[in-house]
Image (cartoon, rainbow, N blue to C red; front, side):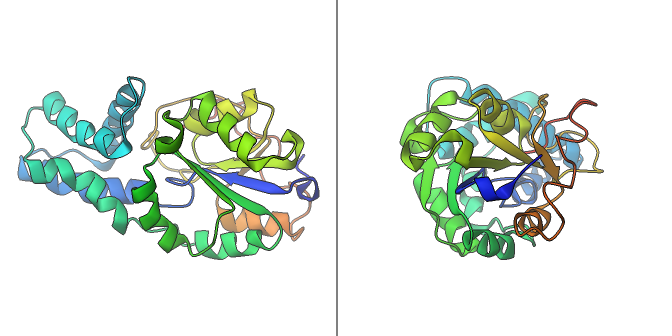
Length: 254
C-alpha cells in the first residue's frame, strides 16, 4: 500500500522511465547495423545492448559516452562487422535527440507541485543536460554516474542521493522502469519503490537485463502515477504491492 502523503521527495531513473531510450537506441543502432547488412529485429538489438552495456559498466568506471562507444564496438565484434568512427560516436551523439514519453512532462509538472523531484541516472552531466531541456521541470537534485563514479545497480549511487536529499528514508519514494538497475537496490536500502512497467504487453526484456524484485507498487506510466499521487484513483490502487512481481517480475528498462 502506498500512501503518497507520507513522501516529500520522489527520486527518478531517467532513461527508460522519463526518456524513451529504447526508441533512441534503435534509432541510432539500426542504421549502423543495416549499413553492414545486419538485419536484426528490435528485440535482438535491445537485448544485445542490455547485455553489452551491463558487462561494460561492471568493469572499471568510465564515462557513459565511452560506455556507449564500447557498446557499438563490441556489438560489431559480436556479430561480425567493424564500425567506423562516426558509427561508434553515433549512439552517444543521439542522446540529445531522445524524447520523453508522451506522458512524462505533464506528469512531472503535476508531481512537482507536491514533491521534491530528484534524478538518479547512469549518465554523464553533459549528456543529461540535453535531456533536462526536454523534461521541462527543475529538479531539486541531479545525481549522475559521472558525479559518483559508479553505475546503478551500485549501492553508491543511491547512498549519495539519500545523503544529498537529507530526508528520512521513509519520506523518499523511488520511481523507475528498471528492476535490475533500480528497484532491487532501492528496496535493499529500505526505500519504497514504484515500478513503471513501460514494457507491459511487449515481448522480450528490452534494453536491460532480467531481474526479480517486488516493488511496492506497479504502474503502467507516469500519468497513472501522477493521478494516484493526487488521490484521483485512491491510495496506491494500480498494481498494488508489485502486482506481477510474484509471478516473476522481469526487467524492462534503465
